[in-house]
Image (cartoon, rainbow, N blue to C red; front, side, top):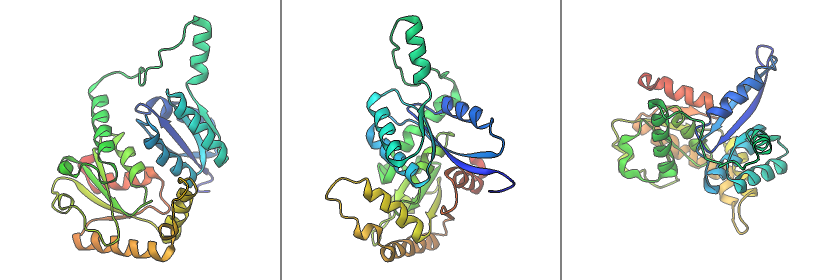
Length: 273
């Protein structure tokens, strides 16, 4: 509790930009003056591969889950995982759509993002989101110079959700994993335009999040080294050495929400405001 307020995590999952959810979540949260929502926004979630890291993030910071997902299979996956985690979740649009269908006597067309106006800001966000999804976890390093921000860090340092949060504000963000003993791509080392930021966390925090990840992994996955604290400490030491050698700023995400981390990144480069 801080300044007399209780803080809680509010996870907003959307297959579009997330604006509808943000408005609905804030309208509801405003009715509870003694509590402050820490928003986590996950836009453009349209397949299972994109959804699974989001569910892992929720597991690491349990709270209320609101979503607007058209795909029924993904909606059912969210409902099932939230039940397993013991966190409340609600499909914000589904009751409204059902009401419309009942009154109008016709099924909805279920178009993703049908409520958004196609203005310049919208296209800027979509462009940033597409770039960010294409450059998640070290993918497509060939055009990293086009990024506004490049996030670096070992596994489970919130690179992907932070990237998506920044992208939803029109900031093209790529993230590249740091693997113990493996050199970074030259295109990262020699990038001039992007702001490059290193993300770290405590060994205990990373181990805890990785343990949750292992629990949800497919059978046969061996996560002993992945969750070993000594191994994680070595990974962090290696990452910090890279950041120091290149004079890149470092942000500790251990006690920061995604929003706080994103704000710290934007503050490092005023022109991103």
